Image (cartoon, rainbow, N blue to C red; front, side, top):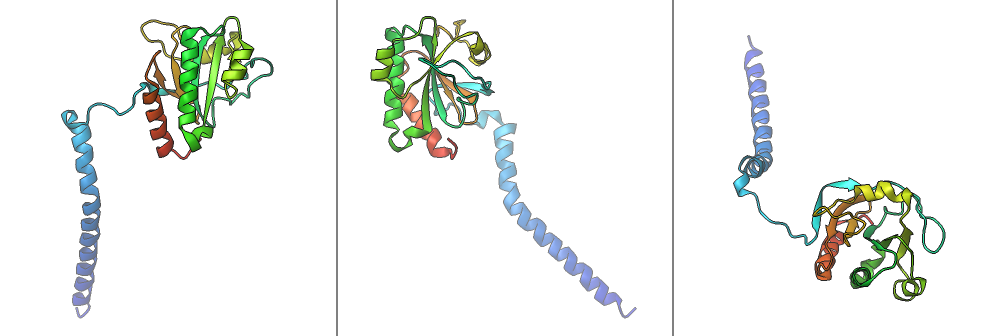
Length: 209
């Protein structure tokens, strides 16, 4: 009988500690639970609109690892679309006015990244007759030019279509992250300032690439 007060006191102390722990947990968890409820339980309160200028690929699509023929010679590494951010343009190897404008825009965007420019590579998937070597050598020495052959079919299949236009003739620029995921695209004549803004934001937020 003499031990009862001691046991009751120990029980009270345990209950008090438990209430204290639960109270501290509630302080941290309740705001998170409320935020999740407001976002998922009340869709009308979700923030609308996005800050990106490109068209998101949802969900992002992993690009296949392929070794493809380079222009003028050689082959790519199978992971050439990974490890860095990639601006990928698909167009005719003859590279007419629209193609040249797209390559110029991606070049200027990369240069404007300044100290981060080496985190970004430019790739030209050249279809048909390829290519004007003098033009590419003088205007785009940093460009990775890949010949589109049958071996590129798995990569082309990943690129989304818009308005029923094949990626081969759509004239779009595609953005691939350093994990090899296709995440965004830009239509022909998209303002390069928007592309630059997107890349600057992504490079600022990301530690990869």
